[in-house]
Length: 235
Image 1: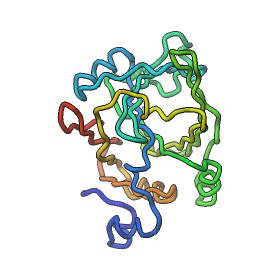
Image 2 (image 1 turned 120 degrees about the vertical axis):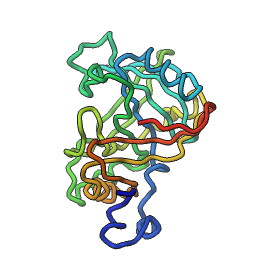
Image 3 (image 1 turned 180 degrees about the vertical axis):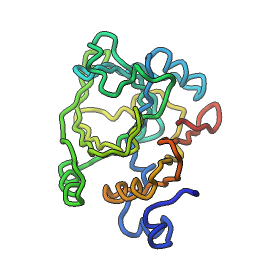
Image 4 (image 1 turned 30 degrees about the vertical axis):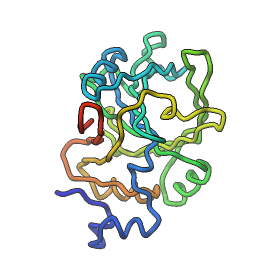
């Protein structure tokens, strides 16, 4: 089945109709993509070999069991390579990153300017949400970034892959990571594959997003990236 949106199936119209209804294209809404890996150093090397840019170590997430490395995907977008932090207990690895046999796009974050308003709208749309919650990451310099996140509880994921995004609002005092991470790669598009594409597209719509979803037995997030090594797909 070709890529579709819920409106294109039910109404026989394409993305222009959905955009006319005030939906935001999911690619432009991306704050960051999360590439899950079992080992951060190997993940950095894997990305560098394919993208041609070496990600910079970002820091650790205290209490969350993870650490990361980042590279910019253009203004307002970045790639987060996220891995277990060996200095934290295994039990904190809620994403089960240690079980990954290879790098995978596991989920993504959408930029929020008023996360409380998004929470209210999502609940009114019948979605169950968690948050907003406070988050932080300690930088190698010793400084700390702060943000708030909102998650949508759902059963659309499979294993470590969660195609329904979470929302993030950065503290005004925290610079956006795309502004100070290694550059050279640009996010071109973000698409999704799912056994129930209509339902996934409807959740995007309820969140104010326009996402292109195709039918597939497995759940997959696919990003097209323009890089120094040419155009490539990350899944």
